[in-house]
Image (cartoon, rainbow, N blue to C red):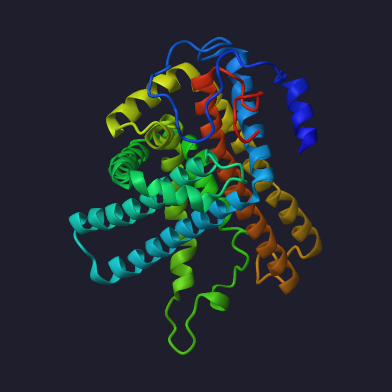
Length: 372
């Protein structure tokens, strides 16, 4: 990671310099005094805030490289979203058989969404507290989770607010897609429609022979695997996309709750105040990390091209050979690992952007972060 530090120092202007103000104390003992006043480098915009956003991403990479135990966040968050996909598939099967009314459908969506969101918010709180620990030892994710229990009531309320916002945005999205005029249909095709079409192809759908994995022997019905993929998987991705939008709009709520012990109202107001000053850095960081995931995702085109050259008919039309199925599985696993590791870096970057806004220093500068 020394190379990354050199690159960020020389290309992004993140030179080591004495802090402009006193560095934050080691640990979670932040001053309760608000410091939402104007930030350096052009406030909310300008090249300075863009450098802050990219610098926070690199700072998150360095922190994760030096504290590998934070990868437990990656694993547990992945298990939470896997559980959401299984839950979506199970609900799809149940609803197909009992055909509940619209109220019960909304209740099911709320309960599953609330459980998922609370787990993710609580894990994020544990991550923030873990890397803000007062100890000289390496950051511990599970230590952060233990400390996050103190704020569980506020985090539950915040999760409740978020799940209501997710359901509202989901309804708005569905309503708008129904109103799309024919001339604007390409917008949906480039977005949700394109993505759905892509992941039903090889290498994401590694078998086009449905009888291989989706038929229950001796029964003839569809197995749970088909319910989880693609139905549950697609619903989870749709749910996650809305969550990411909300997290970008409210990035500092969790840090304000767990680091400054703010009430939910104060945390939301403080997050919007800080976001108004640092929105360019937050958006830049999100786009930078998104580009990394997109780059790995687009490598599926190379796999499709190679499979089409070697086995043009078997891979595309019929059941792919075992070698290509194994290769596709490895690619999908690698893609998921990269996505969740980048999500972990994003969680660390949120904390770095928050401290940067409070101390008015660039992420990773001397004295800004107790861990660096």
